[in-house]
Length: 294
Image 1 (cartoon, rainbow, N blue to C red):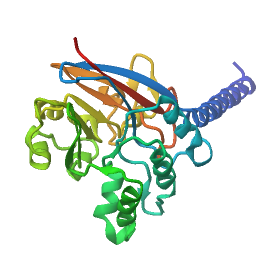
Image 2 (cartoon, helix red, strand yellow):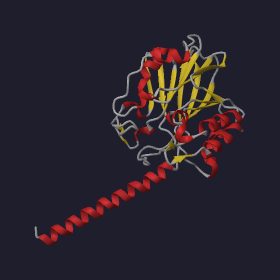
Image 3 (cartoon, one colour):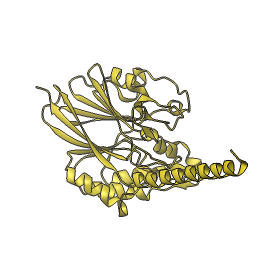
């Protein structure tokens, strides 16, 4: 091949690569703005009557319509018996920390006239831990929860019904470390929450999905997690590519998992932050149907 032809081939290849990258970014932008509603059903002999729950996580200041009206309208359409928020509704990092989207979300959900439960993600915990950076923002966040009558599950368990308990646990910072976080044992949850009630269907809001074994062994019938944003890019047959803790192709990037009759639902989340990409990975609003087991 002559030099001129080689040069043309290189330019053509570069152009094709640039075009593919542009198309990928355009598709990612579309995906980030269009969530999907996905339903899961869980049956248990502990559940005495059906319930419909909405679970959302990792909004990270994303907006679906003005003041998140599209998201709020979808939650209203579902008519849930309760809404559970798994943390990280906001982005909290140096140079970017704002609660306006969280305020809009809580204000809208408060109009639904159903209980709302909120457990911390790592961004809420960062607000509380780094007060020297974020000032009184954590206190403002707590006031928002109180203003909109949200049940704040910071290392706390409440009996929602006579047959269902809902807990939220703060996950210590060492469990969020990159690459190789510490392992967790059930005693970690016992120290923060006490023992799970074996007679009630136990829901646990625990932001990181890495520790399903500990959650199940503690007594959670259904663990609700997020944090991994679906793995950023999802490849059919392989799943999510990368977690925020730089683990590659981790099986818990999103979906429903079961072991020994206990489940974990991992939300793909509704937003992004540092890696602002979603490909093959639509934002997710999770609907949970709890049914008595005959």
